[in-house]
Image (cartoon, rainbow, N blue to C red; front, side):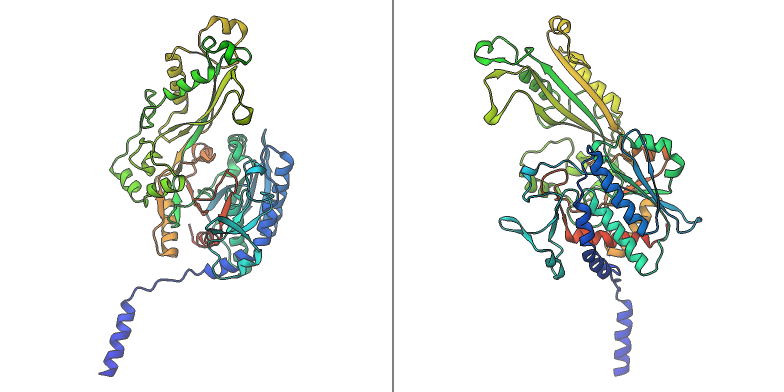
Length: 501
């Protein structure tokens, strides 16, 4: 009887699902903490893309790291800043996967950071009063996942690059080769809309082609679950300027007589959307249909609406879509900045000479950028404005009642890879098998990355593998990277790098 009992227990154990361990978790933690000094050194290099000398130092750092890992690399020179292309050939018969990252960062406003130097990384923990600094040896403890590394570009996008290098370093240490050939494409002016990238794609087409392009940029889903992004919106920018008196005039002397350009511009901007935030310009949303298949993908994303409202402290939101994910499937028209006269302590009692609004249009795959820009222009003309592409001359100022200067540029279009494509299925299986949880599938991310030329010119499918925390303050003061995301990113890249494509 006792023998039969043991047999039954063994049988039942055999039926129990065995959840595999995250085999790289300990290595990622150990090596990730060990590499913090290198990460801090990298973050200490200022990387404003408008400062060529700063970028040169970052390129040199990247070249040194890649050389130590056995990469061959070259600079792809363009009329702007170069791209850095690095190759690691494991075997000529293996497929080649390209990885895109950018190593430049947004400019910093020192007065807005809660630390003396945004390029001197600080380790911090969240308290009831905000974040407080910790000594770096706090990373030797156990509960380190929720600690944050504060520095410019810690999350966007130096962090993912260091995660990737750390994963490769671990494979080198255990004498294990990646399962495919690797091509790294490092961009140093992404925050300037990558003006040299389309030229590089055309000029170095054969050198850039790959079987799949993975984008290591952007934040994970707020749930913290592994995330795959199958598309990004593109971006076009517009500058609108209205004109009043040739120079600012005293509001007491000329109020009620001279027209105010700030008021005129505000009316133009307000006329572009209805009360629920939908663009009223004809044909702005043309070509977009969300069929049952698409809605199923969107509904599969854990809802973020309540969390977004709480984090941003907003109650009333636009209703272009029924929820956050649905809203990202449409192009957006955004006022990103306005300027006219003076405000605050510098405010003056004047009628300003001009008023300017900077706008952006986030594009989706169905969008025709030129048509959307033309629609904005036509809308303004229908309001009675003469639209110019230059500052009006004296003759034009005296000839036309209402003048608006409009300048527009398409930085790059949107891209999207089918969520059911074989490349997506390969990545989904890797993350599902490793984390024992299906990744969050994002059909279209709200942000823009300048890799659409790879898709359109080279025919390379592209998928994003984001690793950083959503609340990382990218582009803003106090940018940060959660330590748990840093370590998990190393694991994710190890799982991908060791799986045959």
